[in-house]
Image (cartoon, rainbow, N blue to C red; front, side, top):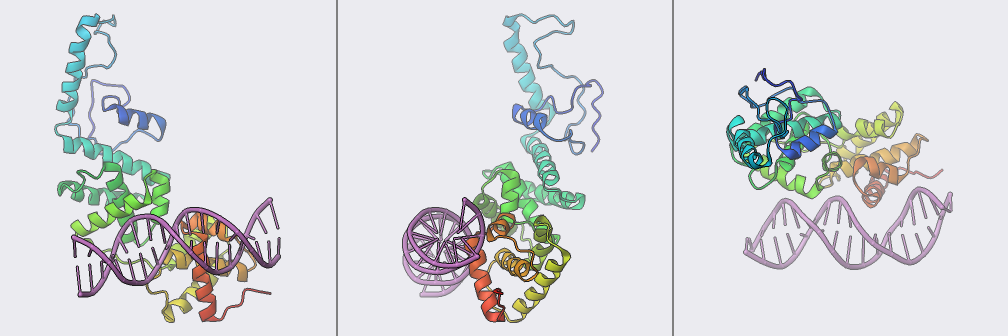
Length: 272
DNA sequence: AAGACGAAAGTGGTTGA
DNA sequence: TCAACAACTTTCGTCTT
């Protein structure tokens, strides 16, 4: 979609609603894609000036306010298109904040459109659905982020994102595989500034753990965190349970429980 | 003082009658 | 529809380094 706003040389987000102006003014470059604006050229300024720059009498201001309001509606057609442009900008913000690749962002926006077309956004909030589609996309693409990570980046509650994600994936009948703990290991390790040795150690232990079952029913994130904890001790690059809890988004208690089980079954001794 | 430990109670989703 | 259930979290007192 081409943005051809000839008459207006101001910042391109100017004429949208106040919420967007606040958000866009604070962070990130102006959005370049998908403004569902058909190129309407005459803009009613938000300044109370006429075309000569002189002030407009108070009496007429109310009238102009109404005009602006009407134009806002007319400019972008209908409410679903307006909320789509909002959604796309939220998505871009989230993705750049989380350093996600372009192809993930594009897949996510496709899924969002599908959801919007099926009226799944209504009553759930654009931000929440954006976060959920991003969560879904990352998993589909085999680069899962945790709900905690998306929660941190978006400022939404993990619970809500999870709820929305379940709803969306059910309604769109998306096949989403359960991530293996391995898909978290290298990312967590690099966030903890651990060496490649620890990554490899973690992979080895994970292989054992998976072979001998008994991670069934356990959350993959907790297992990954526990295995990393074990590996840091074995490789003499120890991190505290708290540090690992912070990057993985599970609690220290969960790490303890998992790593106790694993060390017992695999007969690993962490003492010296 | 910080890390690790584990008990106990709470939360929210899943499952099966 | 609802109660039982499993996984995980929160909280907190205690032990270890």
